[in-house]
Image (cartoon, rainbow, N blue to C red; front, top):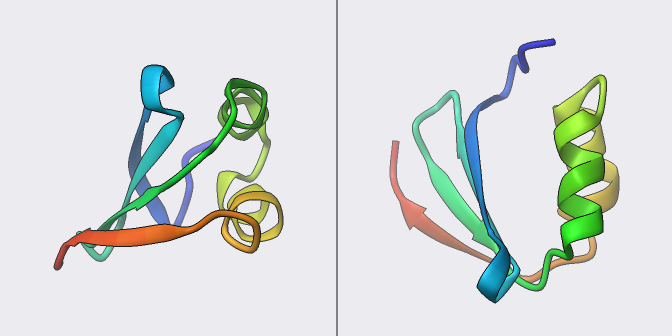
Length: 67
């Protein structure tokens, strides 16, 4: 199911980094995201809900681009 808040995402397994671009155009990177967390995110029915409950509160992040 397409997300209403997440436009695209990319995972860098070698450095355990998740890059998320939101529909606003803003991109953030989230540090120390495990392969298991990414796999669960990728298969979640609602990526936005999974992200808000299981990734955002537990991982340090950095804004990469403005929208």
